[in-house]
Length: 336
Image (cartoon, rainbow, N blue to C red; front, side, top):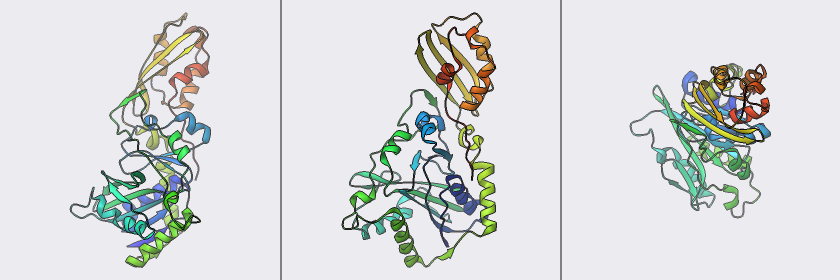
């Protein structure tokens, strides 16, 4: 098995690196890495229903879908992420006790009595410090976890939605948990920072298993960047792949109430119904038809409505008003 300290802080690159190791290089590996501020969505989730889009837009957070299932998580440089890829063995898929044993022992050496609780969480004093997830490809299993060492918990809580009644879908919704940072529980090690924790954990693993140290070479990096561009930086993967869902939202304006009910299929508006107590010259059904086929994201909605005389359908309505009711999430526009 190889041991990698991936120094990239780019979320799309780092998630692509995991898939590269799992599906292309196909080599057992242990990798440590960190992301700059981002929201990482579980493979089976509806992206729009998991994030506070207004907050995401304002703070320019990157939103990336990962390979594994489970819930949405917030990443920043206060997090340490670890990835384990090894041959799948009978009973090890969903065996979180097996894959988290080393981390739990390492935490014990720091004087922390952490424990695996429920399906896939590690708790400290009853609060979550690490969530874990898994996926399988061929004869390999990938287990990864997000360790809260000194993350910005205020941003974490504001960026993620515990539930959103505007969205009704078959996707897996995140379960809200009480969380805490490891740093708050350290005794006599108050100066320990996230980088120190990462390096100490890496040394602990190296001393225990003597894995071969490895750094991505030029060919590896080229392949990872290509995978990131073609998949992890695309709207199709991060948003369009969301399970089909119904969207309902409304807002009261001085000229009347606007309520929108949309059915989204493959990330695009399949059907649209706009109701309310507003007035208009033309039949609202014409506007509804114009919305069908539009991606359920800000850029496409704005472009679609720009070519429409909204005043003729909803007297007094501005483009920004209807966008506010219809808007779901911002376009994926991230660069490596």
